[in-house]
Amino acid sequence: MTDAPDIKRLSQQKLKACAAALMTSAVAAAMAPATLAADLQTPVQAASVPVIPVERSWEFVIAPYLLAPTIQGDTTIGRLPNTSLDVSPGTIFENLQFGAMGHFEALYDGRFGATLDIAYMDLGSGRTFPRVGGTADAGVKQLVTEAFFGYRFWTGGRDWLEAYAGGRWWYNQIDFNVSVPGNSFSRTITEQWVDPVIGLRGQHFFNEKWSVFGSGNIGGFGLVSDFTWGAQAGVGYHFNDRWALHLQYKATGVDYDNGKSGTSAFSYDTVTHGPMAGVAFRF
Image (tube, rainbow, N blue to C red; front, side):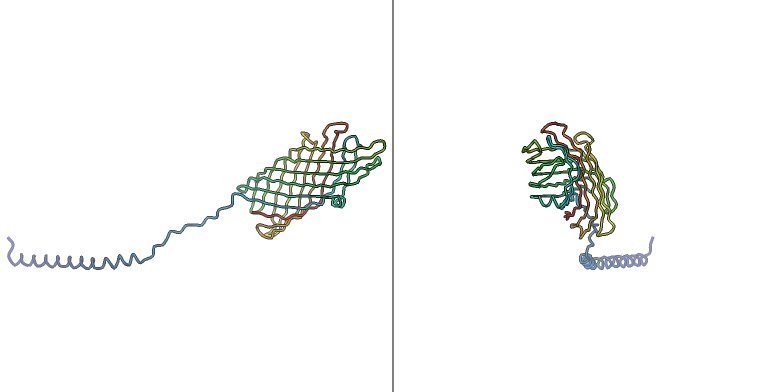
């Protein structure tokens, strides 16, 4: 049995323990609103989201240009004898009634591209002198259009190399009055054809402002013309990412014969070459 004093002492100890527990709970309850208020006043840090630049899927280039061409070679029209051509830029501009030249590009995903180049000249009426004597007054309209699809198989920074394939469309319309010994006549001849073409081109930047460009292609392969080729090279000055000035030299050759005889005969074995200047706008 436990003595009465011991029971009384144990009861006092239990009362003190209960009082201490109640005091601790009261203090905790009193501090809880202040702690919650402090937590609510603390700003919540937003998660940091990295900014990833998104490259444009499509890029376009518009580049009008001016070519000062020299045309050299040989041509046969109808029953006229084969005639040598050596037409200077001065002669062309003297007889030029209208001209339009432009280059257009579209590039997708930095790899797949398409280009279109158009050069049209209306030379009006010029006066030539065939070797056999006599005169010929001729009005010449010529359109050369190139359409290519390309793939940039190598890129390094702003530098790139591209393989391309497509076609070159020649359209020639000649209105002439001919007077040669024993024969005088007037006629309009329209001759057009499309040559398959394959080639390579590329661009290299020396620094932020200056670049060099080159392109070369071959075609025909006897399918339409016996052979055709093109070459182009020059430098570019880039004012910014959108505007650039290009100075180049361009040459295009073709050896074509329609295989006809008599008044329908037409052959054109020439090289057209000269300096060109243009402005390119990229967007």
